[in-house]
Image 1: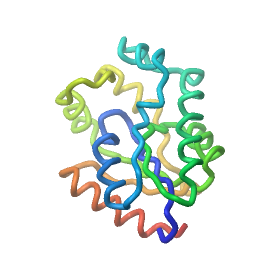
Image 2: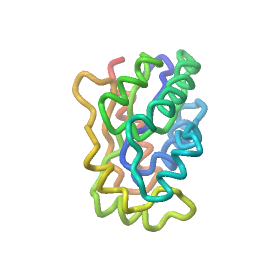
Image 3: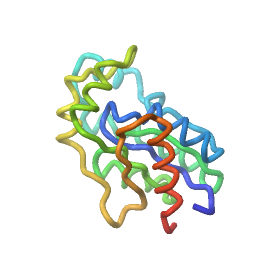
Length: 169
């Protein structure tokens, strides 16, 4: 990646978007934005109650992330967003056409264990199945890479940086 791009760190809850995102941004020398901070309060309340969001809940959130990414075009940045469906990624790309995706993937048992161990997050492990059911992995025509989340955050970040550098964009 010779030109600074905006990287959207995506994946189901518990894959480490909030951990890897800032580490990746530091490695790339660009700012990080936490995708959860773009959620309206109603979305947080809904998820905290164990109710999955529907698309009408997600559109304003995705648009806000997209506006941030658009503002970083040519400057680079890293932002987290589950971006589970192709249509969500298309919506982000509509706002920020140059965005690339880093899909954090992993074994369901490992992800559930990590979710159970984290403190103070609004997303309950009960929603993990709905996340996996919704997930549509990156397709070949989408600019991005997939990286497994096994190992330490530093190891995952180094694999992500290497994979992103191999992108022909």
